[in-house]
Length: 502
Image (tube, rainbow, N blue to C red):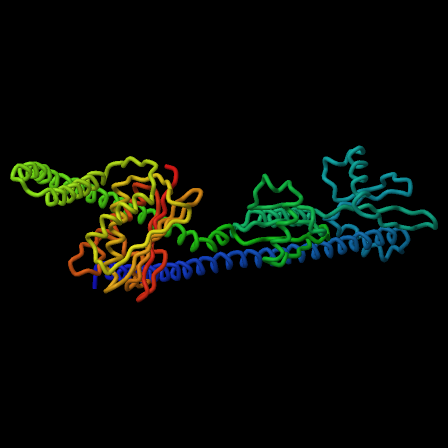
């Protein structure tokens, strides 16, 4: 098993472990969020139930006060009847009526004739006995309760005006405080839920709590918010002291709304962190690889340079020994090739100079060199779509190196007789070079790893040719190189994409 197969298996295993960790983390987080959400819902529910009970209590208290008010009016009517009877009753019954009259010690009363002249009063404070004060108090009583009429001596009558008793007034203050406390409990609730308190039309807002004050003035926003609250929770119907129906609309607490999105936010943050970490480590790894490539290339160029210079000197020595010209010519050609290789290595790591060159001419030159050094059983075909001249922005020595690497791999993939086709396509922006063979092909799982350093199917190969090819095309020419098509047993097509303009 080669290193890249192991790498793929490790990636797959780590991906499964990471998926399990993410799944368990999200599951446990969801459990916690659900528990907290249930607790928030229970708080809101308890608050709503408490508000409902308190509304019922306030309503019940109001009913009780209405009954007390009726009882006080009955007492006034009895007192008025006793007053009339005192005038008309025989002497033996006066004691009973006198007890009734003197028994009223709590209800303030003012008796007038039919012309509103004050005849008597009872249960008023000492400071209010002045006439002006009595008249003022009489007007207040008129506005609150209807008078009780006493008829006597034919068409003569007196009017009994009355007010709430002291005890009733004190209880009324308690009721008002209870209603005020009820309204306060609605808007400043312990459950921290957004709440709107409306009138019977469910349109006019009487009070609100835990809602953005800047938006509360917008009628459209309030209408939309009430409808949303209605869908989340049914409104609470309450009846208070003025016998008018009111409604309480409430929503989920902001914390509960945030908890719903927390797992997704957590997953997003973790994913973003992993992506950033992967990008940084990948960038650092690529930078290290670049340094290694540059160092090896320059060291190789340096190591080749010294013996190459010596060999060039030895050629001159061989000339003086009368060695035949054909032998010297072949040696010079190979030395020229070594110089080209040295130049290629020296360009790795430095920004190469890209110039407009004829791609077909570079291909022909490369094939001419390779034909004399590769198997004679392999035929080479070079075709182009637009004439003979196709210009692209390239560095000729590096492009020749790329072509050599791909063509040599194609020949190595052919067992016995075969062919290598090179087709050039000239387009408006790019130049495409397709190099096809009828060799053994590349398995689908290896199409991306063939460009990785060290990947090789040869027993003695280093696996650096296609890696250098990818680096030269993509890093130095800003182009692309990839496996365009491959079928096991039928052959492979590599495509090189070059820019026509730098």
